[in-house]
Image (cartoon, rainbow over all chains, first blue to last red; front, side):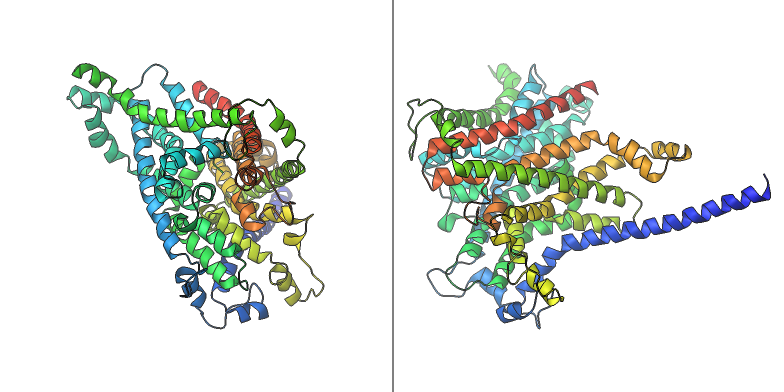
Length: 300
Length: 291
């Protein structure tokens, strides 16, 4: 190899190093720009919630509050203390807790059992049964809203937390079944066979063998169901109103109520309170959240 | 007796879920379907009335606006979410040191409800105190931004908020897809002299076809069902300019008490979703059977 080609090769290397460096700067620039875009609303919500209305009118979305003014948080959570027309989130927050805990439990448990039968006690046509259940993940709920409203009325549980627990438990089954079925499929059947030879029955195998190794999928399913049910608005707004409403419905009512001057700081504090539980779950268990998201994705 | 119980135990355990889904999903859809062929107003009436509700639906101005809005929203939402998602995923896949933090930031909106998102964006897009004031304060004195209260532009505010909420999710889908591609393919192409751009454009993006398909289905599904975001952001207004089918359906049923017409609109939504989902399920199942 002559010296000149060596030099030109060196030049080429240098040039590509420079373009690479520029390219990397460009990459970081775009990525950080988008990070700002995604963070921006959260930032605006937070600073607005700590401002006084005076500061809101004087400043703009980005300006920081003069001091941390927590009054709007107190109003959002506990109201102003006068009777009629004073809506605040505390009772609705508990409504949502009372709804989300049992509904998540029931749907997860039923899904685990169903997934167990569909993978470890296979029978002719079981994949059709799975498909039959899976279809429930995809329906637009508008197609079941009218008969559901009537059914809840007939059962005497419309406009109640219990009614919402029933609704969310049922329409969660397709998703929880999907999660558990896909997880149990990958668990070797030999494990079950060995246990059966040892005389373990249907329930013993489920509770003593499968449940102890199901922790990851239970976490994924519980997070998914918790997030979906906590964030639901359609069922909440359709089947409950007044004092039995879940938090998303209450938040919407608070923001829309036009009885007095708009208080954007209270609105933002309320929105953060309503989003707080799911946000915490996301921050603490993001990995499981994303896993659920990518496998149970088709839900609006 | 005990033996046969033991033998049928799995099916007995399966029965509740199958029963519940049969009744509450399939039974209810059939009921809605049936009601859409009657002339029910506040209460369901069961005498058949033919396809009158469907004719009425497609002659209702508000429904036509809703369908128009759905088309505009779906196309923009789909294209923008996929472009942002693909770009972010490819960029993040270049061994970025702060990937974990960035990914967390891009995806957190998915943890929030559409009501929370809508409330936040409604404030940001506020025609006097929001974005407009920000730009005026920055020195653009004649800057106006009134999309939220502008009949012709309000639908785009829903796109803005929707994209903010969902594009991180598309990023996550594509990132998972990119991670499943073996490095060898990229290396081999580079040795053959292909530039990084060519590698992505000609090799990797075409390999992502299943992920495009999944994103397409998920996003179309979200957009057909979009309801909460509109309620929180515009309530379908100004006027009826941002009505969408899901909002039309509930308003017709619960405010206007036209149950049969509402059922007809629900069935139209159902068919639109089915048209997207059934081919998807079919192809997924085929893929599972092949592998």
